[in-house]
Length: 455
Image (cartoon, helix red, strand yellow):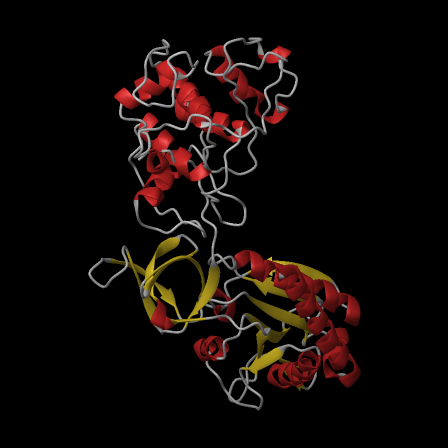
């Protein structure tokens, strides 16, 4: 059926034109409304006499494409016989400029008409219909994982759209939609044909996520297909926030970093709208951490962290504490507490030390491990910029390191070194309740800065 075979695909912000009339102006330079952004593709088609202009010297890039115009352009692109002649459709006159191309396309199996024996040459073609046409015209058969919010992921329509996108003829809209029922304009149609003819014009598809989910299983198998009969190709760790692209029954197609595949939806949770941050006071119990000038790191970090907790909660941010008393907690357990508490971010509080008592200042660390590294770096940067200014310490900057609580952490994570407990000046500030308040307030503001950036 023509309405099933003429299916087209929409592309992101394209502009290109084609016009089909017996009397043409000829040169691109004479066409006054060619979009400059796509002049290369336009000239390519004009040079090959695939498209020409209207008698008034325009291209009319925003005009909607009719069925006879589409058949003519495809016919010219493929080098079909365009000699005007009798057509197998009762509503197409052999005197029509498109008659030869329409019949040639029918003979090649590229198009068919309606059940009532008509072709409806003046009817407008939708983006969805054009996908069918281009798939058949350029013999496209390869498919891949292509997802659009308004296109079911099965059936002939999806296969046609998938083939065009996989081949690089088109992309979707920024919102992840395809708009298959919308009419296609000359600019879009022409650009698609140019890409079909010349691979150097083709584009790369980027899937648009339809939402995020949090893995709540200890380790969630990722499979090559939607079912346990498919091979396991990797796993997502507990607490990982994965992007979702498609749902098939009880399975979803998801990605995290470079790993993409199917997982069972029963092991996924919807992220909370609340901001939930894990605050980790370093050391504790049998592990005093660094010591200096009568201070123990574990006491400083707990004092500052408890103040930080109170400030964050006043700002509407939920806090998960890895410890609230002088208790020893292993490094892996600290990460686990944050993940199990559904935290979306992790901040570990520490005090620095050195064999050189002159070493001083504040520094903040992040890890480049995993796809969360950019978020971790931003978190560290926002906190660092607030903290050293608030307490008047030397700015030692934001640094990359593989401390276990941030390296193995599936959450955006940072480790803050408030100051050097082994430096007389820094140590005095670490011991001061006034400065501890300033530290807590500055870190809280940095966290708020991060959430604002993230949103």
